[in-house]
Length: 235
Ligand code: SF4
Image (cartoon, rainbow, N blue to C red; front, side, top):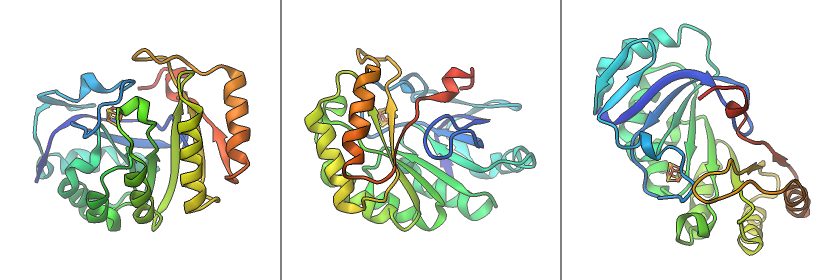
């Protein structure tokens, strides 16, 4: 079983509900979207996987070859394995292999659009951090895909995340809030202020406060959490 992976490393989850937890990150190569603010673009086309503490290995990575390395890394206590990217759901067979062979909770960081692929791995996933993408960032309307994705993800510990820039449109934000409310108003929503990138700027402090209040009119738990790993010098 093989998949292209850009890096494997142990670090601190810097975003969302499980911020601060120690995780082993597996960053898969490739994505089905092209967000204007993507900060991992340079990592998505690599011919080698940088395995922390082991060095470079060729892509695609063979699961059997890295299994002993993963097991060794996990001897030090980790909260979970973060499957990140890119979009990890492009590699469902590899994810199922990890889930079946490694005894550690799997935390899926996903753009929330690949419903059939989620269905294939859902039994092996424990936690899902799902993005809701604003149309102006991805150049298309993904509301229906997000809705279907949530229905499958709801079987697990799932929360949703919206990246807010100063440029994000109120109309799109309102649609996202309505989508979450129509699904489950108790679903945790993380508002993540944009780290300036790709022509997007950070939202003003006033905007964040106003939009959190707007969201709280319809959703019960709305938290504002930035990319804390960047503040403390972690990758
Ligand atoms: S979904 Fe994530 S990895 Fe894919 S293009 Fe957007 S920001 Fe980059």
